[in-house]
Image 1 (cartoon, rainbow, N blue to C red):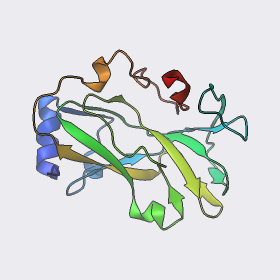
Image 2 (tube, one colour; image 1 turned 45 degrees about the vertical axis):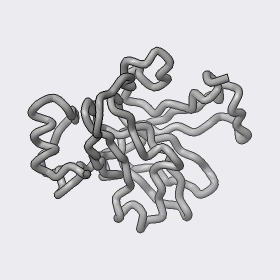
Image 3 (cartoon, helix red, strand yellow; image 1 turned 90 degrees about the horizontal axis):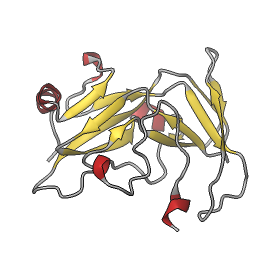
Length: 177
């Protein structure tokens, strides 16, 4: 079951959902709009290795924006820090972003109960397109869970993305080997 705007507000009031900064105008009927943060990153090497740490080069989007190019994976980040303690957050691109040919996540659109951080975006595009820090980039949709939770994400010993950040985070797949 998807939370409605009223249920999202109730969850925020009770602390079950945290969105910082929270802007009431970004609350939709059953979602919350998130915005592109000011940092982007690209992998330093063209060939990535799942068993090794792949370093990234980080840069800041200037006021003139930044042109995304096809054939490059960009790591972005949401402006918003979020926490979810009793629902499953799903991040989807806004339809206006999709109509510009931008994908904001390759596979990681679902968060875990207990995820507390900004969202790293796996951005790609089908043709060159200029993006700007602060522009609406996606929307969070919250699904209710059924049952007790044994392992909240933010309490797992092996969780790889628990360090709070305002910058994109590269793949930590290498830690699984």
